[in-house]
Length: 144
Image (cartoon, rainbow, N blue to C red; front, top):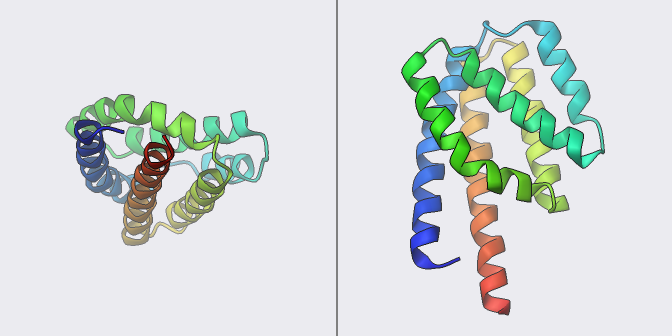
């Protein structure tokens, strides 16, 4: 990853971390319990395609349930930028497992209507993902 690409990625993920953390907090109480139960079951699946679909669904459900149109617009635009990294993440067993653990914890916080915990976990998840992506690209660059 060249420097400009790395800086762009860091900026996008830093913004996403704050905004999507806020969206998770605001979404508490707005998501049907059955939908959350379904997501938990999807995250227990070992099929990479289903995990990727559940990952995308969780983020879309949270964004769609935050009841803040401007926040939704901003996160949708950022989501389009990170979708490539999200898809690539499921090719990495370590990143996939880590993301799935966070996703289940986030869903449980939403089920418990704990906005502070949902926000904290979402921020932590996105920060960890950002760092893993940077490390993966750095390793590839170092090995080239």
